[in-house]
Length: 63
Image 1 (cartoon, rainbow, N blue to C red):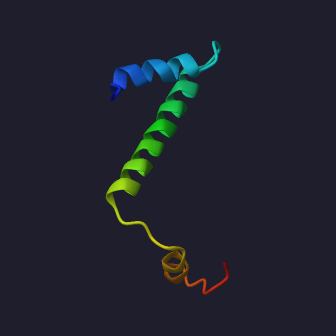
Image 2 (spheres, one colour; image 1 turned 180 degrees about the vertical axis):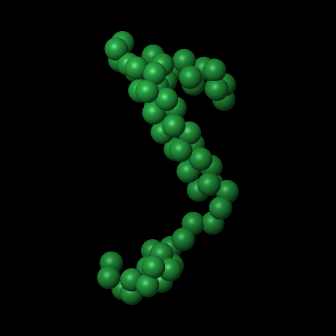
Image 3 (cartoon, rainbow, N blue to C red; image 1 turned 90 degrees about the vertical axis):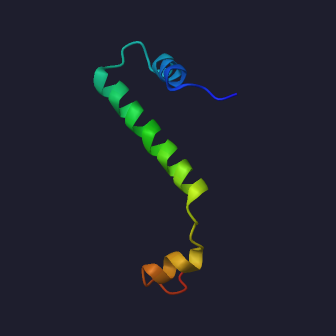
């Protein structure tokens, strides 16, 4: 069952310590958004192999 953004925001708030600041909340939201974008990207876009990453950065076979 999919959860709504509102439900996820509530969970995030509840996971923060009682003395959390607005900055703590904003950072937690930022991290959550970045993770969700990364997961979505990994699902939708082709992933590179280790060899492709090494080739892109001219690293040779140093693995």
